[in-house]
Amino acid sequence: MSKADLDRADNLIVSKRYRAALDITKSLIRRPDSDPRAFALHALALKALGRKEEALPIDREAVRRFPQGRIGWHNLAATLGDLGKGDEAVQAVETAFRLGLDAPETWLVYARALVAVGRLDEGEQAYRRLIKRRPGEVAWGLELANLVWMRTGDFTAGDTILLEMSQMGAPPVPILLGRADLARAAGRADLAWDLMIQALRIAPDNVQALLATTQAAVEGQRLGDAEILIRQALGRAPAEPAVLNQAAIVDLALERPQQALDKVRQGLLKDPNNQSLWAWASVAARQVGDPLYDEICDYNTLVRVFDLPPPKGWPDLATFLTDLDQALSVQHKYQREPANQSVRGGSQLSHFLKGSDDPAIKAAFELFTEAVNRFLTDLPAGTDPLRSRKAKTWRFQGAWSVLLRQGGSHATHMHIEGWISSVFYVATPAVSAGAPDKQGWLAIGEPPIMLSPPCPAVTYVEPRPGRLVLFPSYVWHGVIPFKTDDRRLTMAFDIVPT
Image 1 (cartoon, rainbow, N blue to C red):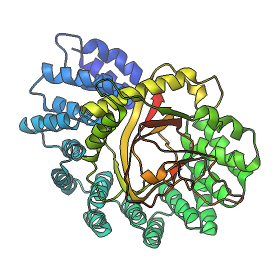
Image 2 (image 1 turned 180 degrees about the horizontal axis):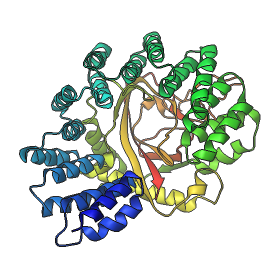
Image 3 (image 1 turned 120 degrees about the vertical axis):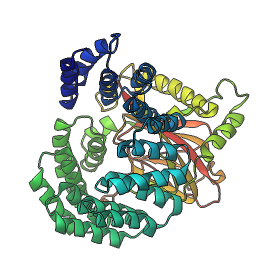
Image 4 (image 1 turned 90 degrees about the vertical axis):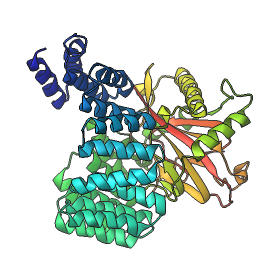
């Protein structure tokens, strides 16, 4: 086998020409004298294109052909982890370890897989081991700090991890921003602000720090500070969609909706599928009465409610939901929600539930698939960001579960990585049924900042066990708090066209 061919495929992947790389590697992996690197590059290109399920058999074939190849076992474990197959991922990593692999990246795959299967003590220890070996990888430390926060609800315990990384030489700005996220989750907004200001003193031109601090200023009604900060960010990266997105938020908060609309339109020229830009475009258009609002927020057409039947193998819906409740609840081992997320007063599973082998969870995704296909079949043509991307094929981009307890809610948010998003109700508070005050209901159309004039929710969906709601990922949605002791257990997923 030609090393030049492998090098050429590798260079194509580095330059993000993934399909061209596949054209080379697909023939290389079929050869009797194939090299393990050919399988690794082929799977890597597939995963870069979002085709992780197609990468899995390639990784499996690699370890079958080269059972002593420890890198192949690492690659298989990483793909299994990406697909939510945690138990198999753990086994694959342990095989790589037995073959002598001891890289920090492999310990990261191991830590994530252990957490996904609920072996939280072992997962935490794996994270601590790899961070000691590479303290400069702030993203890994943030994962550990978040894990400790979710397990304990102890801000100091999570914050200490990041402080220790800082003392070991980790870059200070991302550490400070990560600590700020934890502080905000713990309800310590003033500390979060101080930490972000520290980050800006160290790196006044850091765009990420400027944007994070600008958003905190908007949320804290420090609008004068927000305007100063966003001007600095615009000076550094005037055409960057993320900067234009944040600038539009500031314009809206300062009652300049037309300027906000102009900015999001500018951002969409560069990033036409950016769901956050579309979400803020809907707010700005609503404020100024632009026809764009009616086009992209036709909720009667773009939001669909399905009351699903029991899947095959279950006598009735109640029995199925009981089994599904049990399968999900046993995984909700956390005391608190993830930092920097929209859940309030509950817990969230972040691993990819679509990969579960539990019969009830698998059956739920079969029902979801049927409902999505019906939704797409019935969806009329249109130029909005949902219908303009209508495709016959699609894939699950993410799939998770949220458990809300007494007083729980879900702050208004949208899903930046999706195309179509969802919520499926497994268990709902009794108080939600027909509630005139809509406790626990899904509220649609209200943005997450204070505006003048106000932009209240436009429509609501009553939660019912067995009900699935589908909507565009750019649609603002949240959960109205409920005050009873009941639980609210849901599944959710994003899909994207392929």
